[in-house]
Image 1 (cartoon, rainbow, N blue to C red):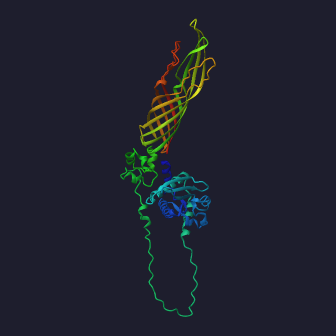
Image 2: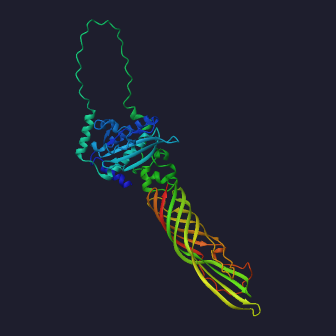
Image 3: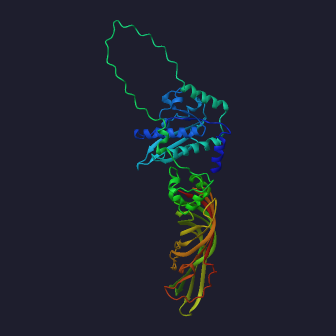
Length: 490
């Protein structure tokens, strides 16, 4: 964005000549905003003219189109799309001044180009009554960007715009007044009074109003010395966006809006991440179900249940907040499919012989959904600039459901219940910021699992199990994940 700004300023500057701009009267949302709308319009027109542009205002445009076609232009569906082709200008700046329910004054500005019915750029900025000049500078800056993206007008159009303005300001020749008729008789003498001169307004008053003045924003040539609140006044940059970045911002000497695009600090924003990745480790779960039947009656039941190694894709969503530019906190909600591997079997014995006569078993594999939550903290090792390496840590709670297995007719198995496995998470990654409010990232994490259900668990609640069962394959009691996604900062 900074590059576009520089190119726009250069494109529309002295090297390419002035740009004709149609700026209709600013539209107040209600009559209460009429005076402020007029004040802001004058400030914007003055700033655009100061930047070298040729401004065609409503008065000049009304010499070409009917006044009704441009009155309250911001709310007319035909303005300025049907007006621009009739004027020697390719761009139009249209503004509406609104008062929100909390009393905030909002300047809604739309930027149009010939042959484009819809606005090519829309901006909103809060405006205080004593901060008209910063608003005008913001509009002029965005105008330069818009012009820089499409290129300047021709010399012929600039000459036509100048001629239109000159003709509109040249008063029409007055019609000759008829000769007065001679009075039939001399009028009586009337007492003469010296007329009282009308008070005249100092033409410089509008230019020297305190609300139209603003201090320098900075171009990066030298560090800032003014307080931060004064530097960001009248801009869209909030004070909370610079928490943890105050010294870096003042040292940069940049306009706060340019600084947000150069340093891309994260502070003071709600964060939402949409993520996807791949996990490997204790993803699956397995269970071994056994029953004992003696003389045709079930006498015992037992199971062993625990984690099993696997791998699958995962999807995640994170909602958080960045209290300072070098950290953010959040809660991750994740989903990952895993397998359920179940084997069951029956031991059949007779009381007289006390020997096992029969043993049968079968295996079953199904899919199951794992849900996990991670409260987490991320620390940025390099908090400024487009590339930000980071470390991340937190805790995880992984939930899994029970085993929905149909019981056979001849026996009743004990079934493992649903549960959860806690764990600790740590890892690192890289965030690439495309701008102040969006970033792309890649991340790798290691989760160590703890707790009773993180290892094989046996249920002998019916009675001791006297038969020898082979152990489960060992796992690492951990999960390794690689994720990537996009972060939005609101």
